[in-house]
Length: 437
Image 1: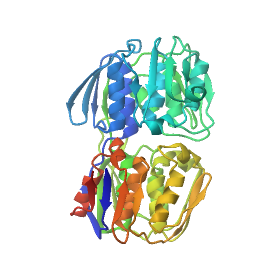
Image 2 (image 1 turned 120 degrees about the vertical axis):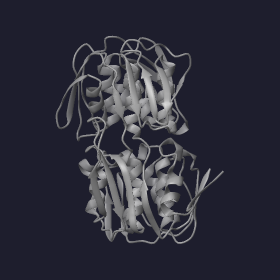
Image 3 (image 1 turned 135 degrees about the vertical axis):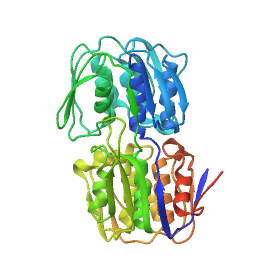
C-alpha cells in the first residue's frame, strides 16, 4: 500500500484521534487479570492493540465486542489464565510483547511469543533480565533477548528492586505486572520519569502502589474489574497538531486527547517553538487519565532544543517534530534519543535518509539529529520502511512540499491510526492523501 500526498493550502475543522495505544494495551491486560468484568470504552481498534485482545482471549479471558471501541472483558482472575493452544503472535507491537512477558512471568506454563520481522529484531533483553531475576524462565534467540521467546513463569516470583538503566515505561510495566505474583513488594527506579499509565491503571483496578518522582513500588495482590475510558492518543494527535502549525489558518481542534503529564512533551516543545496552541480541559468519565481539547493553527515556528528528561515524554513524537523543525527558523537539536534507533525502524537514520530525498538536510548524531531551518520540502518518492510513525511524518511533510509525494509501504499506519488518511482529507476539505494498493 502507498500514499500519494498532495500539498494543501489550509486545514480547518475538528477531529478525533483513535484511543491511546498505551492505555488500550494495559486495559486489556489488567481486565484479563482482574476478578469480575471490565468495561473498556474508546479502545484502539488498530492492529497492535487487537493483538493484545487476541492474546488474552487465547489465555482464557472472555472478550465481547459491544460496539466500536467498546469491549467487555470477563477476567480470568490473577491465577486463572491458562496455557494457550498456539504461539502468541504480537505482530509489530513491542508494547504487547514486553507487557505480556511481565504477565507470563507469573504463569506456571510455557508460552511462545513471536512477532513480525521488525519486532523479532527489537531488543527484549532489558525486560527479560529482571524477570529472570524474579524467577521466570525466558529462552530464545540471541541468548533470550529477541523474539521468538519461550516463557515459563513461577509462583510466587521473587520480589526485587530493579534499577532500570533507561527510562522505559515498557520495562517498568513488565516488572510491575510480574510483581502482582511476587512474594513481597517489587520496586522499579528509573533515571528519569517515564509514562505512568500502568501505575494509574493498576490503582484503578485496586492495586496498592507507592510512587516517587523516579520510583514506584507495588504490593502484590488481586485486581478487581472496573470501567476504563481510553482518551485519544496524543501520539496520533501530534501529526495533526504539527500539520496545523505549518499550514494556513483557520486551524484544527482535536477533541478529548489524553494529556497525561508523562506524555505531553510534544505540547511543551510546540509551545517552545512558538506554536499557536490552545489546551482546554475536557470532561472525563474517570479520573485515571486526564483529557483535553487541543487547538493548533498556523505559526511562525522557531527552533528549539529537545533532550534530557523531555525525551521519555515524547519519544514517539520525534519523527513529526523533525518535520516541524525543518520548517522552523534556526537550528533545532535533538539529543539523548538513542532509543529511536531500536524502534520499529532506526528512526534517526530513516528520517535523515527519507527527508534528504525531499530536499531537507538532517544531520545524524548517534543519539539524535540536528536540523537547520527553514527548509523547503519538495515532492519525492520515499518509503516508511514499515514504520507507521515514519510513514505519517512523511505524509505531513508531503502536505507542505512542492509537488506530489509518494510514500511506499504505508499499510503499517493501521497499527496505530487506521483513519489517518481519511482524517487529513476531511480537515483539508478535499482528497490530499490518496491511498493506493
